[in-house]
Length: 434
Ligand SMILES: [Mn+2]
Image (cartoon, rainbow, N blue to C red; front, side, top):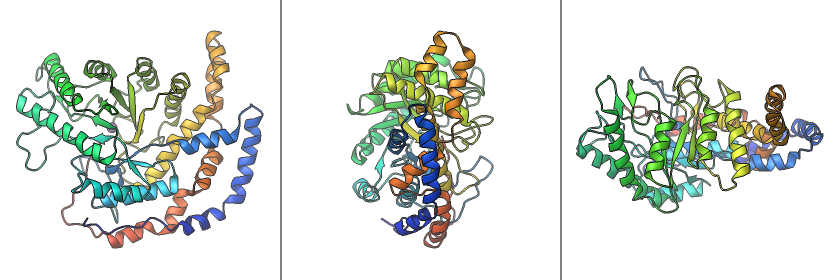
């Protein structure tokens, strides 16, 4: 290990910061509890559910992202996977909703997987889904992905892409992961450039080859994306293509929904329902967008949409207790401290979940059956409009996190300490977001 071991935040700093806020929190919590009790809702049960909620952190989200125009790095950014995991531990220490890390290979390939696992577990974290990368060329790689990977017209590139995905599975087994997420940049920039069905067929063949290496207790998650880097067509363009591919590939192959990978105004919550109804909803990448695949912070633009997605997820789980999709934040932090964005975004996702738990489903079902559109939408809105902040704060307080985690993070001086311990490497470049 070449990194300077970064310490997490002194727990005493968190306790001192919380102490100033406990009286106000207890008062708010009691008032909310009384309000909820009038609707036969137990605040303690909601707080327990909030505490159990978890969303994985993307290893590449700890550094400043960037656009294709520029990247403006911040101070003390992590320089390797150990420092990324250390920052993840701080996000979890304060926010208490992010106990796992999702690795991107080869950006974060460890030289010694068992050492990385030990280090990560010592910080109280585990590894979530593994992400492969066949959308850019790596140093020393014999074949280029310029014209695609799993759907490439030439077999050498396809074989290389399959071999890489199998390597990622093998690494994930050593790290305790249980899923492989596959996103490819394959597609075309011009009409006529690519034969649609031949390309999709080649992708399916590769997906099946990868699936043969999937352990019995793993899931394979296919992520679709409407455009970029290919701008005319992408091979796994939409949820329909994703569903067909997952169905063809195998039972443990499922679809992953990235909230930014749809056409504007698409009804994502209905896609969620459709995929789940047929047993093919496997995971989520949370982010938000205004125009396209903006990778903005979760809940920052359209929190109602995020709530409506969770309204479906809660409904699905109520009817199928075994439903356990993989959740991950997938955002690009261009103008904020990534640690702050990840803490805040995880809380926004958690908030949507808690609000979705508040939906009176019996009433909603009655209004749906009776075609009472006004009261059906009002039932959703009454849950959405309730301020559940005291529940989130209490869940964090009870598990040792920060009542106001961003304020506590700023008081801790963690970023300034990182800036001293992590001098900027000359020539270090940014990593992208998928
Ligand atoms: Mn994604």
